Length: 452
Image 1 (cartoon, rainbow, N blue to C red):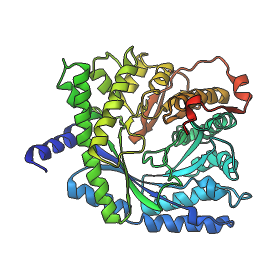
Image 2: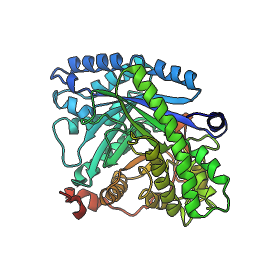
Image 3: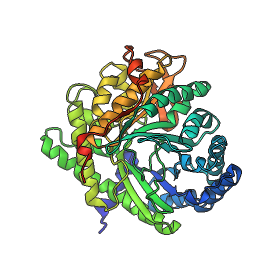
Image 4: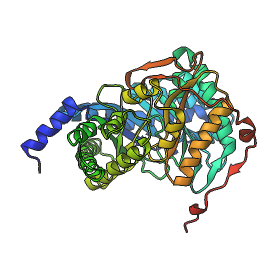
């Protein structure tokens, strides 16, 4: 039951601590849009998305006014487009990307995800065509996001896909070099990708999902930071309890918004993704949470342990607040989108190797990291392979979203503005892994994948 204290507390968290609904994302199945005629298929895609999501933005805006809760983004995720491209193998899949962009423009959403392929066990019809088209697709669209899943705990890692994606990431950055390489910021390479993720750029609508549904992504790093700042002398156990209680409150807000949106749009409620997703705004930083626990700077010794505590406590608090918790749920550690991460990287405390270690316990992986523009494609592949291995062995989702900053060197800044912020170009290990990547083949699944 609501009381005056709870209402005032929520108002304070929104006004002073950057609490918001980061996104409401409508997942839409496009399986019934498959057609061997790509033009007909694209028209079906446009028609279905615009019919289903016609009122998505206005609904989000109405809920914002009704509850006084900021809903930052309204987004759409769709069936991996490689599945539609398979039906018209001789056609350029970029036509689908343009149809998705047209639908995004009509609906007024911030991003549309699903220009995707799932190739963790191998390439099927349509996959290669779509992957090769990603650089062009992301260059000619502004709101379309792309993802490729190259590994899983049950299947191992497709190293042929890893090698290819190193080249694709670099080519995507090159094609959008005049836009600060923004294309690479809309491309994610996954291991153990989930089907109900509402966050971009990795969102797609899985084939196990219903025809249409609503997901909610909640974010409140500032709220968690403010909560732990009230307990400067608390023990680790007490800190965990504080974070759990705070996550519970944040998740209840997401549950409320998700249920309301589901009812208004008359589509099933999917999940609440409780992911502490930072922004460049002051006070909205995951790094500052970790520093509030007692670290001088994020990236120093103890950072991975502190992040593990945070991620676990957030999930435990979230699952007590909603039976619909899913997606990625935990803590994101993007560099360019987090003011504290940027500061730690600039002063040399946070490096790529430490970020990789932190991905073993965070929500996803290496996210929004600018690297020197002359990075080799094989080095990008090596970074993807390492991250996929962490995900495969630990049975968790991991991802890589690197931005080769074409024309920039270590120490330069790459500016995106808005939600994507800006980030320093981080140093990389220049020793070659090209021969290893060129071997191709498949890294077998770990022993613990055999569970039946």
